[in-house]
Image 1 (tube, one colour):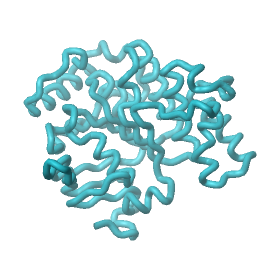
Image 2 (image 1 turned 180 degrees about the vertical axis):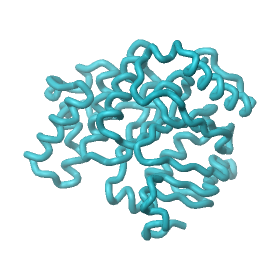
Image 3 (image 1 turned 135 degrees about the vertical axis):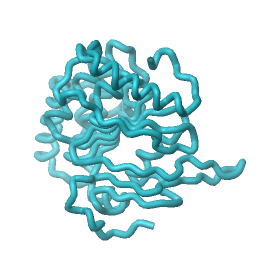
Length: 274
């Protein structure tokens, strides 16, 4: 479906592009259509949030970008190439819902793991670990073990690991969903600051309307399964934001637009997400 040659638009600022993307899973109970005719473009430096009902294919979309799942129809390019080629060229870092840190390795050694696999020298690994720990505000915790850190700190360590080899794209699958609201707000601010400092392109899955609106330059509202793009909302909010922006009329209007898009899915919204 995807070859290793760059697309004709490889010089454009579009880094992720899909045309009529679809995925059907074969299961013991028959076929399950996860995604259908997904058309989406993500530009370099964008912070794009995917929001929609549970099971609508948000995570599946990220996994296709990362070449962890493979579409059964349509076309996708990452940096103008196939996802498989982009993966081999370390185009992205991936942050899962759980921190997924090895409990027997220190934070520094957890961050070093992908660097060890890639064959970096000890000196280069130490430099990169120091840099990313500073980015996620975990300097001084490099010799701690995961069980000695809070859930929020563990997720920051997971983000640091994804940043360690300096990929241009960061894929994040609802990384703060299991955290309490106070910690989540704090990490939202830190992630926004990190994005501003690094200029990464971020694809972010969330079930929270306020989180999507606060973080994003673009919000993609997806339908119930099979997942389709209902609406793409370009945020008018300034790039530099603090949590206080959530009280502004502009923020409320964007949140209402997202909410209206979600109503088209005909799935009742969780009051906590409103």
